[in-house]
Length: 372
Image (cartoon, rainbow, N blue to C red; front, top):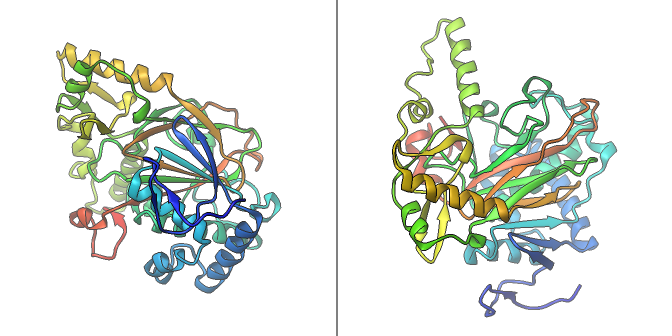
């Protein structure tokens, strides 16, 4: 690997900030390969932190994550800071972290499943890596309506949810903006491959690749569209409400802000930000133009078609980390057949916001990271 003293900018200029790992890319995804020495350093470092803190989401580790992260290999830190500052690509894959199939144990059948004690050190270390990388982009956060507020999710096929449009289904997961219905959706989505023997691809398309008529772009930048919550949020809220009713508590579903977004969605734009390099917010399965707005319907269909035409796939193998800029790219997943025998596809997932403060009204305290 060639060492250089600058990180290249998209416009060809350079900025100081460490050296960049070897990288390649085409379309919406940029690939970065860690060299073996850096990968070994990361593995040792994250195992040390995992042993010290006992959990990837221990308060002390989360509080110090940004400091810890700057002790990662300089080349990786430079690449991530460049991604955040210059928006170099809609998606980035960092490859090379060593993940042992034996060490991590079988793929869970449910995100609630408790890990076997022997697998905890390796699993926790890999989660720490995910949290440290995330902290260079912003702050990790979670939703009370997803996985009981966990900050690091296990994305695994579940026998009870095969047909669901979620990370736990096995049908085609239609591409979308992550939590696109919510104004406090993440800036970045991170997915770390733990196991993927069947090479099931995650699909990605970037807004930069979109080619549509200027008239459609103008319409898409206007609040003429409705977007509702996805099934995963609603299903978890429904389960919580049913449990609360059974326990005789007042934690009903009707007044929850996400339920209100389902019942009374506010019109929003699909494209926003700079007109020459827009961001996007889209989830075709749960989205529509305002009733009777044929012009908006046609513009949305044109955008969907262009994104569909530019979808590319990446099969995340063990140790492959995909970072999706949730304002500049959509993602999904191909259909696959699960065996439920401990060998199925398994990812770790975290969400990142660049500004935790903007969600203060939805969190119980300034330092809390779970949106209620």
